[in-house]
Image (cartoon, rainbow, N blue to C red):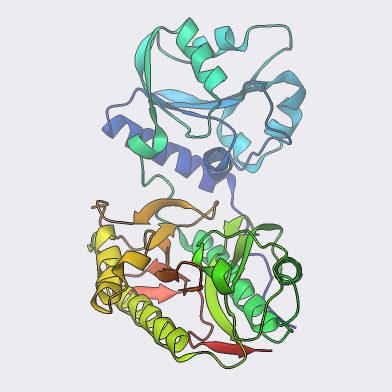
Length: 377
């Protein structure tokens, strides 16, 4: 069992400083007076800081033009915040238990203004800020700056590639194991174990949908015993070196029926067609349209019940989304899934998914396992 787990070059204070400066400028161009970032993936990406526990205590990064980036933290968490790689590019302030953190935060913001705020911000914190700053207004970051983390640099792409390689290695190992007569939860546990063995520090999901359970795209592995003849959807991923993996293959326990073969081949063609449509300047929705057209032409349009893809980075689901109505053009460095599927309720489902990155001339897969219908025992 081998897979490349060597970590890429660490992010530097300059990397984090450049990210904060870029986002501040993007916010200014978007007509915002600043950005408020609370614990979650945006804070990790911008500063390298992830609080040991996300609690009711206010933590927020404030990015404003003509003002040094400032991270406000509870006093007891200040040492950890100052130890983050990106802390050298910002000012750290604290507030003590027993004081009003919103009064402290008020000094970092204008008495009035429009701010972008993390999607993951607690409502109680937003309400607290509104109470002390009644003339401020707020927009979710994904509405104001939807592409903030979408364009990956070379270091980020290297991490995503390593995560994809590890997920591929996991798939190659799992199909060597026995499926028939085992519970879905047992196979899911094997997937989680293998992801960790191949270098993932975090496992986010291990979908094992056998037989009729495969017709539910987000089926949670349960106690169903996998049977001979079942089509089994395997969708799994997590974080490695802080960046995500996400891949899906559909396998069959023993010889598949003609219908399973037919549906699998339609999904394979749809996935390939969508991949071939990837190139700079193409609208995200076009990737969805291309995949959907193949499935609709084959007569299964009503059984393709989700978007074709989602972005991936420091989380496994983030903008951009490959879905009708998303007119954002693809740009080199964007990474996203292409995962069409067909789901026949009460019978079986098929999905094939790769992570793809946009290059200067087209697309490149970060998952490279066989798209054929694997036969497992």
